[in-house]
Every structure is written in C-alpha cells, then in structure tokens.
Amino acid sequence: MINNLLRLSVMLVLLIGQALAAETLTIVYLSRDGDPAYLSKKSYTGLKLKEKNPPIAGVQAAVKGAKIPGRAAGLKFNLVERKLVSGEQAEDAVQTLLASNHDSVFILDLPLAEIEALAASTTDDTILFNVRQPADALRAEKCSPALFHTIASTAMRTDAIAQFLSARNWRNVLVLASPSAGDRTAVHAFTASAAKFGLTIVASREFINSNDPREREKNRPRLLTGDVDYDVIFLADEEGEFGRYLTYNTYHARPVIGAEGLRSSSWHWTWERNGAPQLNQRIRKFANGHPSSEDWAGWAAVKSVVQAAIKSRSVHPVELRKTLRSPDFAVDMYKIGPGSFRTWDQQLRQPILLHTHNAVIAAAPFDGFLHRFNTFDTLGYDAPERRCNLEN
Image 1 (cartoon, one colour):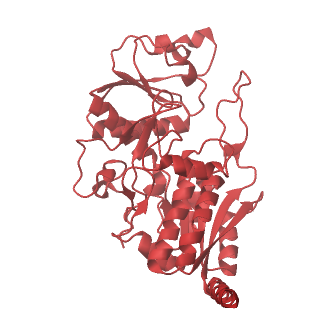
Image 2 (tube, rainbow, N blue to C red; image 1 turned 90 degrees about the vertical axis):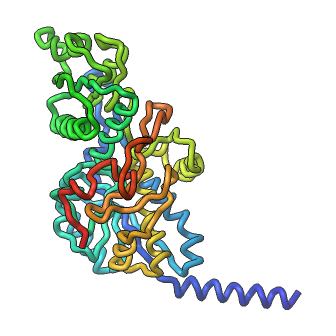
C-alpha cells in the first residue's frame, strides 16, 4: 500500500513538472464588438432570412481536443478571446498582445477591410488565420506572408459548382444576380469558373427586390427565366430575399445552384463520411446549433497550428509558419483526404461540399478533373494562375 502511494506521488510530481516545463502557445480569437455581420437583419416583410453566429465554437472544440496530444509533446495551448471595441484598431491590439506574449497565433473573425489592413501591416514572423472571409483578393493582390486561410475562397466554391455542372453535362447556364457588390463578385468568380471548365453562360440577368409592377421584368422569376434555353440557373443572392422564391417558380423546370438550391461550402453539418459526425458532435458542445463552414474553418485553423507545433516541437511563430508551409505537412480535415497549405497563397487545400439545406449531394473535386500534383488544386487559384507569390 505504501509503495503504491509512493509510486503515485512520484508520478504526480513528474506530471506536474512536465506541465510546468511545457511550452505554451497562446491562440487569440480576435473579433469585433458589434460586428455588422452578426447583427440581426430582417427582410422588408420582417422575416429574419439569414443569421450568422461567430465561429468561436470550432476554435473552442479544437483547443479542448489539443490538450492530450499537447501534453504528450510537452506543449500547452491557451485560448484567449479578445473583442475589439469601437474605435480600436486590430493592428494595435495584435501588437499589444504580441508584446505580452510573443508566442501567439491569431484567429481572425473580423470584417474584410480589417483583415486586409491587418495583413498589410503584419510581417511573416506573425501568424494570422482567416476563418471567415472567402474574398479572392486576400489570396491574390492583397495576400500576406502572415495570413493563412482555412475557409474556402470564392473561386474554390465556384470552381466546385462548375466541376459539378461539367460532370453532369449541364453546360448551359443562366446567371441571375442582384446589382449588389457582393453578388457582382460572385458572378465574376463563376464566370471565370465557367470558362475554366467549359460551361456556356447563355444569359446574365439582373434582378431587384421590388413589388413595383413597372419593374416586373426584373422582379418576377418567370419573366426573368423565360425566352432562353438553359440546363441550370446559377443564382447570386447574398441577401436571400429574391432567391427563396426562385426554385419551383422558373419558366422552365430547371435546377437552381449557387445561393439557393444546391450550394457549395467548406463544411455542412450533414456530411457523414470521414468521421464527420464525431467532429460535429464536438463542436455542438460549444455551439447553439449546427456547425457552420466558419466553425469548421476555426477548428481547422487550431488543428493545423497544433499539429505544426507538435511536428516542429516549437511554439515560435517563425517555426510554425515554416512547418505549415512545408511539403510534408498534412492535417486531417474530417473530409476526403488530408489538407495542406498552398505555398503561393497559403490557402488550405480542401474538398468542397455541394449540399442542399439538409443533405450533402457530392464533394469536389470530381473524377476526371486531374492535376499534376494535387487534385485539390483544381479548385481555386493554382500555381500557374496565381496573383500572389509567397513562395520564398
């Protein structure tokens, strides 16, 4: 009995000593108080059509899951939630946090303009993870050696749609979009994807949200979708008011894809393969609802940096960045195949899920779309077409 107690005491002392000696990496979840993306928005009828929640649940789930492998490697991972107040600049907050703890990485849940400004002002001895913004510009002319992306880009998502349509031989597409800047961006990306995968845009038409009978040619689905032949409709509708009336209300009986009908995302809660139900369950413990693409991206960011720290046996951002960009780095994504980061724009390679509101229908890339090195690079900007060069 005494010997057992003695052995137990020795083990406890060793464990406490290991914990005290462990290197600590601080993971900072950086968000903004009153972020307009999370403010409740109502349509003109008073309905709340689209509500988003911050992706902190995925980050929390990943940090909790890192405790055991971190302990085995002599590493600790500490989560700090930092919310910017009105008038406070993200660049100032990051510099203050780095001054107090140099071994930090930042999960950015911020508006696009703030991520752009932060990326432009941060050097490559800092690590930032974009888990929310799909803007292609962040992977192109506004890329940064400090900025990694775990959320899929707009180009990746429209490429996945175009691959799907090509695989189904639905090659003639009618495009519908509002005049908003976001919808014009989506149309621009889809137009490039259509050209890339051999689709034909037979017409591109603009809709408006209005009951004005004088504008009926722009606000009535049957009038907008008539007088032209097509296999499928690509819809760009970030607001969601027009699109919810489009399916089953077109002139021809054709499927809708894009903002309604079949959508493309980094993640969907109905994905059932590759252990996905287990991951969904872990994230739900911290979330109020189904895990979103942003939740998954937050989880993937922490998972990647934890794996890089264990692999490099270091929590220093310079070593972590080197490991994340190395050709032999791979991270399990609970999706098809391991993920890795492209060296030219630091986007996480990943399959894209094509889904309805309650089922995943397919996952891109599809059979027949080949690549010299990695088929995931058929989605989004490949090395030869890159507009960002972070190779060095």
